[in-house]
Amino acid sequence: MPLLSVIIPVYNEKATIEAVVRAVKDVELPGVRKEIIVVDDGSSDGTRELLKKRFAKDRLVRVLLHPENQGKGAALQTGIGASTGDIVLIQDADLEYNPLDYPRLLAPILSGEADVVFGSRFIGGESHRVLYFWHSIGNRALTMLSNMVTDLNLTDMETCYKVFRGDLVRGIELSEKRFGFEPEITAKVAKLGCRVYEVGIGYRGRTYAEGKKITWKDGVRALWCIVKYSA
Image (tube, rainbow, N blue to C red; front, top):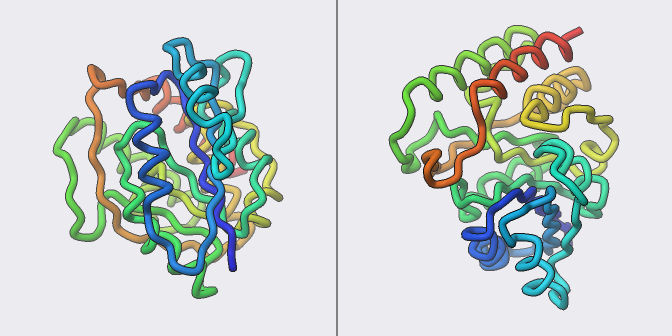
């Protein structure tokens, strides 16, 4: 029976992290076991204390703590390195992405067709919250530029939902500490000649007032990473 490792990087998500972990636990995946690895990246809003109190004795959830904030990519490196699953899935801690999409995300890997699966917010008939025109333009532009250097035809390179064969992703050396993780991992799986699939997912985006963290500076860094890792 395959084991799924769900990696949840967390930074100041006290209001949502319990609900996210509960949703991951509750999603039904017949024939698949789960381990949940929550990596707190130096939260200062009480998230760390909540995690230690709430999940200290939970056999399904492992909590790892960074002493200070390093960035989402650094938290993912820690989580991936600690994972033991046959499959590794990345889950944000903010309720923008719904674990009910797991069955369709896992299907191409479980069937032996794919090595990597991206969950696209721009294909399929799932519901989406309507927000931020310029963010969507930026996402599509970065995806197009990434595709130009990787020769992939993704529709959503910047998506959170990325799923990997465990042995594959644990063998990739990662460098980016913040949101540059997305173009870096995309470039590296492309260079390895991985079988990459996309499936449509739902998306409930947050506003900045609700805690959204990515900024235009991260977009600039993503652009630099596309160039850097295409070499």
